[in-house]
Length: 389
Ligand SMILES: Cc1cc2nc3c(=O)[nH]c(=O)nc-3n(C[C@H](O)[C@H](O)[C@H](O)COP(=O)(O)OP(=O)(O)OC[C@H]3O[C@@H](n4cnc5c(N)ncnc54)[C@H](O)[C@@H]3O)c2cc1C
Image 1: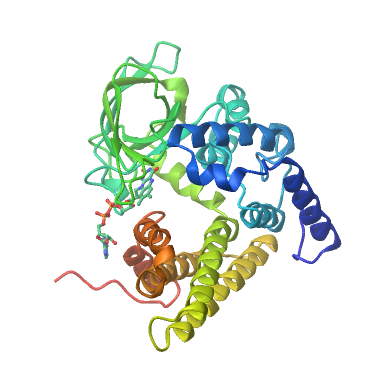
Image 2: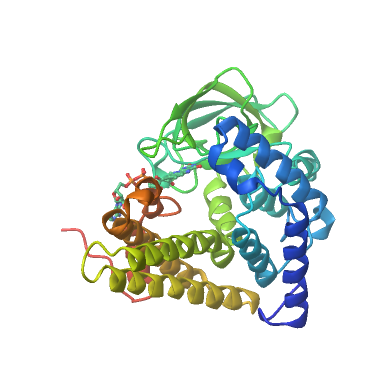
């Protein structure tokens, strides 16, 4: 459904319905379980929760009805994520599939790929990961060196590619059944015209997942080795060598407003923890004022989100504003957790230590802060590239 504002009658009704559903369905001890569960237990909790989201029709919100979605517009989607974050509800497993791979297959996949993959993505029974970054290709992704070498000719069943290379920072690869992978399919063709997009089975010989433990102690991403792994021609998305164009096209599914909501809610919670902590036992003169000032900045994130979501809902360009929002909230989160680490009371020391470490990654994923500054300078401020000397 397309709402044009957060205050439409239909939008208010939708919010009330989601809130009532959450009150009914969210396990009452969820917050406590979330804090004490092991990684495996958390995984199972999220899988169960994903099934509930799917049964209630909340899994592929923005997907077309023909593929099981409800064709939610940006405001409806933002309201949903806002209520989920407000209730501290878990996220269902399989977000990469629902938000990235599913829409990619709907746009560019074959009928066979749609029939084979979309149901499992929607009900969370098949988990996907993104095989883009490599040890020597991150910001400059088109320089990737992982290869997919064609064996045989034609597009028949027997035709396939051999994949060789290393992917890194692959979130959820240790849980994933399939990988949306970019690989080089020609060493002769010009850059940007020699990459293809594949849907690769992770449960096959030749695929090795090596864990990477973050500074915060979490296991959320991995290195993945592809050593003669196989993918069939039928599992290539779009024409051969056109993966870069398809990758760029898939970025248009990112909804900056809805994506940022969970970060906003978390930061808002952290800002209120810090403010009340400083109000009770300020350790330094000016601590409370500093905490309140950063809490005000967190509110600016909320206004940014609403503005972007309304731009998206009204079909207006929002991509550049999304870049500003991502840069703003990611740096603000680091500032907030720096402040929390310095000003908080003893009781919250561990809380801030974890926030400090986790927030470091925010200025790296989904485009680093430096790359975003470059893009904003060029696209929004009209800066010219400096000529090479
Ligand atoms: C939590 C997390 C989850 C991730 N999940 C995935 C995933 O699931 N799948 C996946 O494929 N990838 C994933 N990534 C990887 C992420 O996309 C890359 O880390 C990111 O693109 C940056 O690439 P890089 O790490 O190679 O750094 P580099 O590109 O090597 O950059 C290193 C530093 O140099 C700076 N720099 C680079 N180029 C320029 C330039 N032109 N101008 C100015 N400064 C520059 C960067 O800003 C950065 O500070 C994840 C990363 C994180 C942190």
